[in-house]
Length: 91
Image 1 (cartoon, one colour):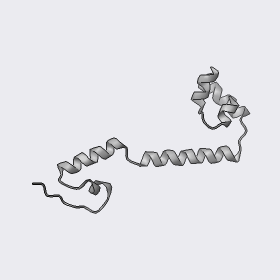
Image 2 (spheres, helix red, strand yellow; image 1 turned 90 degrees about the horizontal axis):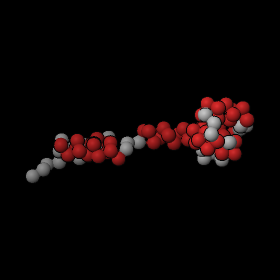
Image 3 (cartoon, helix red, strand yellow; image 1 turned 180 degrees about the vertical axis):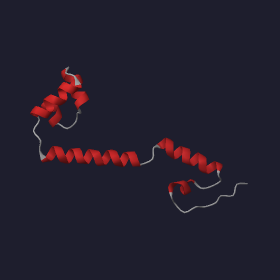
Image 4 (cartoon, one colour; image 1 turned 60 degrees about the horizontal axis):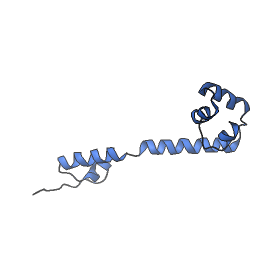
């Protein structure tokens, strides 16, 4: 269990599923025996930053919805992305 956690590729639920322990028991084991060090802290901070960045960036579905709204409003989709508005005349 500790080797999986140290490999930094697995979270507590994945480790628990391999070991057969409950998630709570796995967490207690890791808290007790896994050494805390700077490397683990840096990885956690990096993962948090990546998560926040991904949460802030629009998904493909959101972009398609914006494009659809822009088409209905006869406005270039870039307007909805915060760029300078440009009117489109459709004939």
